[in-house]
Length: 178
Image (cartoon, rainbow, N blue to C red; front, top):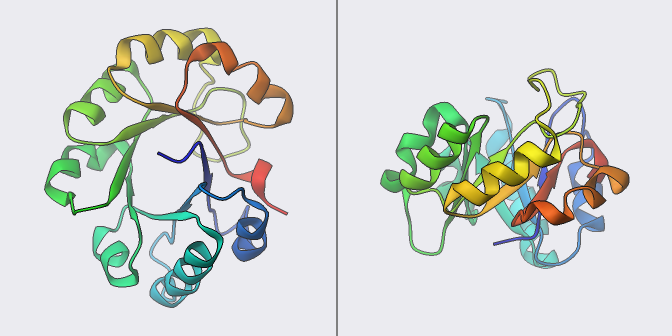
């Protein structure tokens, strides 16, 4: 599993390629197209960059697009986590979003390789809920039964506060943009 996941966002990460150029080898990129008409073209460009840079490209909420562009897997919103096992393909990584301890356990039980818990800290994401903080995250990680990533308000300072939590990795949007 990649130790770092970069989540794209059309409004908050306009230059995805530039951000990918700065990621360490082995990192993951979650391409979230949100139904854009040019999603396949953009996805193919990102897949080329990912292969060249040694990154893992996951596609958000669209397994068919992930398959067409040769992505390394898919990231599912919590509402789609029950589909994880059915979407399994050889070599794919499947992650799922989770916002509660129950969501974490269900995502992993339904076949996700890892779950991405948010929001940990205050975030500028329009969809971010109330932050749970590092202590609650640590409790969730201990009870999860599988790998957990932390997302939401992650930056240089807040990431250090997550070291004792036992997360499999960190995930961010704005902290990784150029």
